[in-house]
Amino acid sequence: MNIRKMKTNLKICLVLSLFGILLLIFLSSHLIPPRDSIINLTEKELDNSVAIYGRISEMKKFEESKFYILTITDKTGSITGTLNSKNLSINKTQEYLIIGKITKYENETQIIIGKIIENDS
Amino acid sequence: MILELVIALLLGILIGTITGLTPGIHINLVSAILLGLSASLLALVSPLVLVIFLVSMAMTHTFVDYVPSIFLGAPDEENFLSILPGHEMLIKGEAYSAVVYTLYGSLSGLLIILIFSPLFFFFLPIIYPYAERIMPFILILTCFFLIYFEKSSRLWAVLIFTISSLLGIATLNLPIKEPLLPLFTGLFGVSSLITSITKKQTIPPQKIKTLKEITLPKTSFFKAIFASIIASPLCSFLPGMGSGQAAVIGSEVMGDLDRKEFLVLLGAINTIVTGLSFITLYTINKSRTGVAVAIKEIIQLSVKDLFIITGIIFISGIVSFFVTIFIAKYFAKFVSKVNYQILSIIIILILFSVVFYFSSFLGFLAMLISTCVGLTCIYAGVRRTHMMGSLLVSTILYYLL
Image (tube, rainbow over all chains, first blue to last red; front, side, top):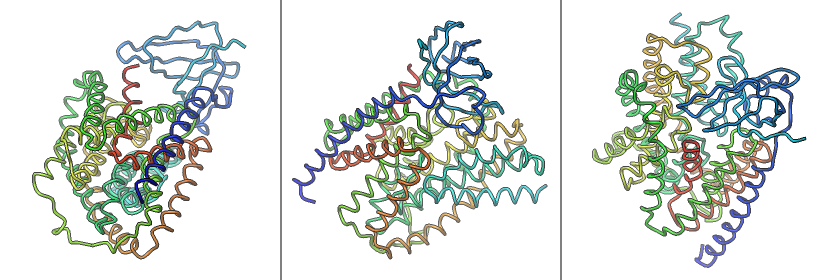
């Protein structure tokens, strides 16, 4: 491959990469997985991204590991969620949109929380 | 009981060979399936039988998975860095030797596991909190060395590292399954295959040397093994860490590693990280691999189980060494007989299908963009390890934020 052709290819790939990454950044911050009820979060959803509306009824903080274990409750049931965060301010009466991935820990289906968004609707 | 254990060991080696040879079929998938069936299986066999199956499968996978990566350019999430030196040796007719170098590393890894197991047993609970605190700073230093030691163009190195970092952060935050699959398939796999197609590369007949002929100077060998000893133990027990990060840390610590040394390093790291993850599970009760998660669900490990697991690691490793040599010989005879352009196109189509199946359309999109980044790096002529920014920066952020 001659040098001119390589330089052209380099430019094309760089431009496509930059546009593509901007697109992925946009999608990763705006895409919300399908909303679900807690009762439907079974083993079938393992490793899937999910979004649930619910209240955080319990919260336990592990100081040393910047780690929270939360109990999320909606009308259909409750599920344990884990969150890596230094600080978390939660209002137990407020409803939140919780986005995360379903996992299994000690035979219990749990959610690894990625984002917690206040639900204003 | 002993017959059951032997059957579990052999089945584990068989399934590990299949997962190692099949791009996209990861041992985590088999572990998840086994976990789903565990209630019924535990009515028939003891938990230890399932554990032996899982351990031997995981260890075999770490030996065999270099074959498709080196011969076909089809990587998985642990060995994607082997594509780079592996492909260079393939076009020189030395792909079989490349696989054997990874096997030398993996075999040495078995011995290192035996040495480190008692150390992990006694000291890991003590050092774990301190290691977790210093890890992000080790990674930041690694990133600095990665760019500083670029010989071609530091500006391009910074640019590739930065865009790879952004790509990694964006991909890992997308709502997709197995986000690393499209990321590394694009960055290291498809981009290499496209380059082979555009360069109209032909594959020469592969040399199948005897093991005695495939040698490495003692200093080179120990350099690679020392690098693996420094990097692997940390990456086997800390969250967010894995073989990829360990390989970059190890190679940057030791400075310039040539192709053969790097392959030995990769083989050793992959095996050590997997093997020590089982010891980690016992000592600090933390699971760092999909297989360790499954074992944790199946059995409450005792010291006796740990001894058995260590034995299984060793036996399955030795058997896998010979299995991989047998398979690599077959691939070496086969690969030069086919039209490599057509083979590359077929592999790209298979990788597209695998990514689409496991990670959906969004994953497919991430793979296409990762491919563009991979090609940019190749055309810019800088080291492709800069694309490890895609994983390193996300890991640093995980520790710091």
